[in-house]
Each structure stands twice: as structure tokens, then as C-alpha cells.
Length: 91
Figure 1 (cartoon, rainbow, N blue to C red):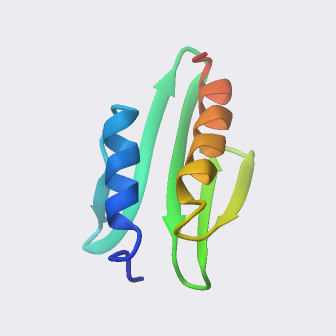
Figure 2: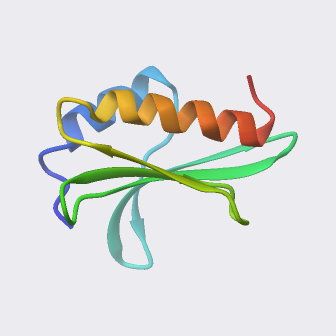
């Protein structure tokens, strides 16, 4: 996956929300965030295979996706973060 076109807005969003951005997983380039709270954990990640899609899941059964493009990426990330925080028990 190529992340060059989304990295600037993604990094700006991560900084604004004080979330560490993971860029490597098992020697594969990724873009993801992990959250934890009193009710559990969640992960937000971005795929760029066919357009841009932001995903959020609770490491169990719940999963949602938010299609985006470079102009709507931050809004999709905001939606995913809201869901992740709700699942984790964080306001």
C-alpha cells in the first residue's frame, strides 16, 4: 500500500488527537492507531488499496468502515475515533 498521499493529513490528525501513529507491523508498512480504555481496546487503521478506507474494530467482533479520499480523510478518522472511544469506554 502506498501511504504517501495521505501521510501529511494523517500525521496532522494524529498530532491533534495526541495518538501515536504505527507505521510498521511485522515488516509491513501500515498506518494504524491503538486505543485502550476501561471497557476494552480498539484499533483504527487505514487501507489505500482501492481508494482510502478507514477501519475501526474492537479486537473481537465489532468492525466499521468509513470510505474516504484525501479531502475527507480527517472526517473519516474523526468518526472512527468517536466509535473507538465509545467501545473503549472513553468519552
